[in-house]
Image (cartoon, rainbow, N blue to C red):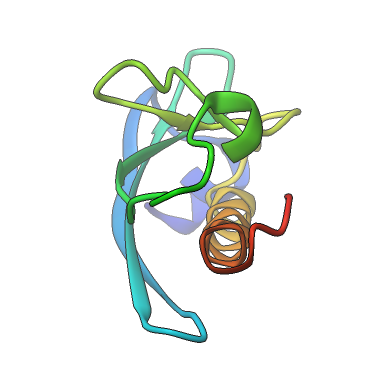
Length: 108
């Protein structure tokens, strides 16, 4: 994405796809996200790969995810971000909170 796209928005569609690794107390957890911009300028944060919740509740409410029964769950966050920088910050925070939830049953 160019500097001008970041300032003024880019066309709709895929913006970025990337991995985030989060170190937990027991292991390293890997997440993969895809960011997509809609026609209204908002960015949807798709969760492509994430660790298992194990024994924890895995429903959308407990895990702050939308569309959990589809092959493209999304991070539940409102309002949706409009910049790539904000979306990446949200995905990092969600991944860190997910690791705490998996390891300690700490709610979001």
